[in-house]
Image (cartoon, rainbow over all chains, first blue to last red; front, side):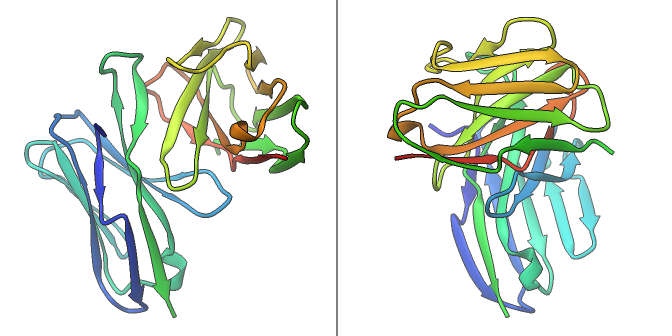
Length: 113
Length: 116
């Protein structure tokens, strides 16, 4: 089973619309990161959230860490074509193996002009 | 700061060829570098972790003899895919960190490897 479940997998919206994508888990984390990855490029860190209930804003992007630190959401207001990309959440996790940065499968966002 | 350069960005080669991918930290010293693989519609999966001057630690299921990793300096790590086959075709991404596993990782732009 996937440690981090991201939903929706795909999202296609019109420019100017608002949207929310989710990252859920049954595990508790000390922190969670959101990345954006554009086709043919590596992921770029957007934000790290560390406190339960924390809300961070990055221009039109609002990130929230769940109170129980098991889930997170990313809300984009008035989406622009430049927001198009794959949004990945990630946590540091050891599980049964090495301590590593573990990613969800991502939400692929397309913003249509 | 914290720029990571990966080269080449794209490789197309015949089956059986060995391919070397370079990962360089341009403006900081990377004690630890990581190599990931990303298949279409899948997330990034860690292949191995390398610390400067020591042998890489491979994740379960990753063949160390097939994916040779060298981290000879604090600014350069290389991944060599030996005797590549079509199933090795993927997007390979490196990242570099100033410290141990839980320090921020800075990602390169990836290498698209296509084996014919």
